[in-house]
Amino acid sequence: MTDYYEILGVAKNASDQEIKSAYRKQALKWHPDRNKSPEASEKFKEINKAFEVLSNPQKKQMYDQYGDSAFDQQTNGAPGGAGGQYYQQGPYKVYTNFGGQGNPFENVDFGGFSDPFDIFEQFFGFQSPFSGGRRTRREVYEMSLSFDEAVHGVEKQTVIKGAKKTIKIPAGVADGMTIRFSDFDVQVKVRSHEHFKREGQDIYYEKEISYPLAVLGGTVDVETIDNPVRLKIRPGTQGGTTVRLRGQGVPYPNSTRRGDQYVIYKIKVPEKISHKVKKIIEELEGEV
Image 1: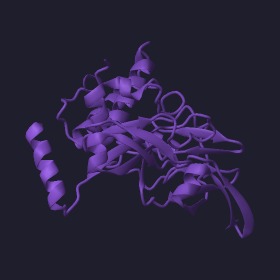
Image 2: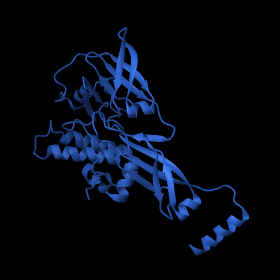
Image 3: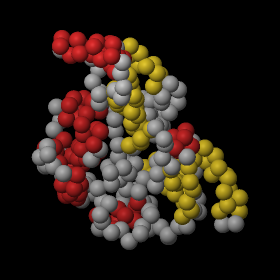
Image 4: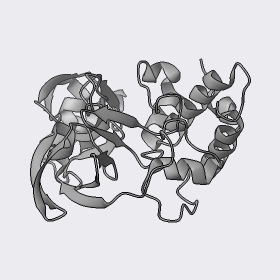
């Protein structure tokens, strides 16, 4: 099993801040544009993967329980390991503000830069190899999206520089991402969802099940961002049990790949029960 704690050089009980600090230190040491050793590129990928898991409470819990096998075929990172997600979509580019969810540089002052290449240069002290040379500062416009519009994509009309424009938002963009057009940028703000919680391209959903269903087992219908699915409940299911639905998460922009959905079971305990039910539960307790 790959030891993500060892890769970052932290203990298993390390705090979030200690994990972020360790990541910053390792990223600076092993970034391929600074470290010319043959193993730098692969080491940098390992560091990014370790931070992606350990900085996310749900993924960290899954890793502690099942190891790195729980995250097979899940990847993150920009081309060449720039440290954030970077996408090309037709005539424009989509990228996170250098790090996406759980940004390890959130306490670093970047002087209000909205361009991730400028942030790269400010933090690492040299120009990003993906920047294509020094660029002039561009105008940035904000666009508000619903949760569904962000995960499924949408076309919206807006006014840019006094002219009506039709803005095509690719499926899978996240809050804070920037869409780059030929002469301006559009930064998206995504509203939260009533039931779904998004972490990167993964979806987390709490499903309440009845106490009898948890004890006896059965089936339950669960919402996803597309269509409901029916899941089998095993007898004796405990509260907090998490089921992974591979490929049921958010699409990666300009890709056929998708994240996963994690369903977390919550057991509904009735506040009031009849005398008959109480006797049955007491008898059941005696047999456990």
